[in-house]
Image 1 (cartoon, rainbow over the protein chains, first blue to last red):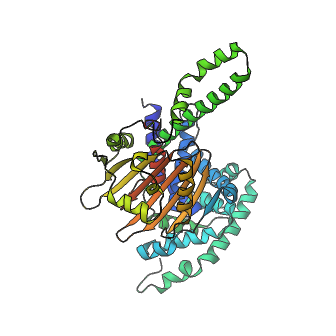
Image 2: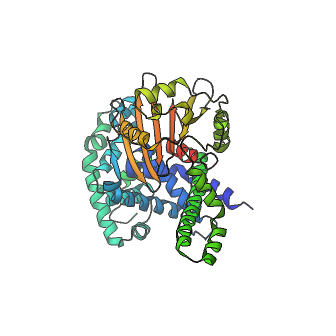
Image 3: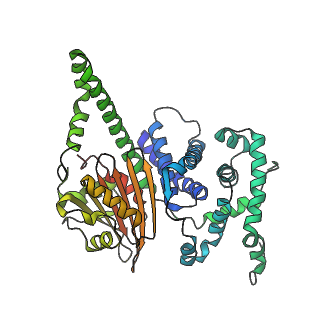
Length: 174
Length: 244
């Protein structure tokens, strides 16, 4: 039988990358995303083995999203970013990152709560009811906000999303 | 999916975008979580001890005696942390790197000579990271090498307890140095975390500085590609093993 510490290590090994992906799309910055993942897992570590967690995966993602939203609410008084992330350098360093960067930029145009809903619904593939519970909202409100956010995303992504595949020489559009 | 908010196109985009996501080292996350837990527990003990000691000043002798029992270990640790500047390092300079390597338990090699590398000294001076304001005697630095062959990176973790006047200068330097590509400052419950980046000719040098409210400066710098998050290393560098 595994000890709680070993169980936690296995959980982190299995889930840290998925948590990092969610965090990255939420905050759009690798280092802030790492911080969010670490803070999330620290909170989990503090309760791991001390009380039962029915669904550790959902618990971790919910904790991460709430931490992010909480951090965003406090940001104006606690954090002074001297410069925005450096998408230009990232693009120049590796053009293959375009899709990820475009998606990040489009998400950045959404309000924090809408971004959280989009990430939970379409990246983490969580049901509406679960998202609603995690964010302490009504399911109908989650659906409405998700629909509007997706519409905005499609507009923001614009060329890169709809037109780029057609422009690819020899591309089949799939 | 029958929900009216279904968006398979967006789901597909997320799936594609994730393929280029940077990898995170789960091992370091676990160690950071464990280190963070230890730090939190230590701080809780200190807070409790401080509160109890304050009460004891105005309470009866009986209360004071009971308090003293609870005070015990944490108080001695606090007293040590309030030692005069430049004193009280828990680890000799030439053992810093090895202690760090042990704490990290990862694919890193500790340099054992205790010499502060030239690239770090140069980076802190040119980019104004602040540690150049300190005399060598005020600083302990551990140097680690990460990776093998051609893809190696170096990590320097410096720990110091600078005088208050130097702290003000360091903060000013960190937040206004013109050579720094980007800076962010975050207030935490225990101090200020300042992240600075500088594009040098050979590679990006990234430095995380933690200025604790209790007077400690921990500065973590890396040169080259690094899979470890520097903030995490800084948390590990706050280890009570030498902050005493």
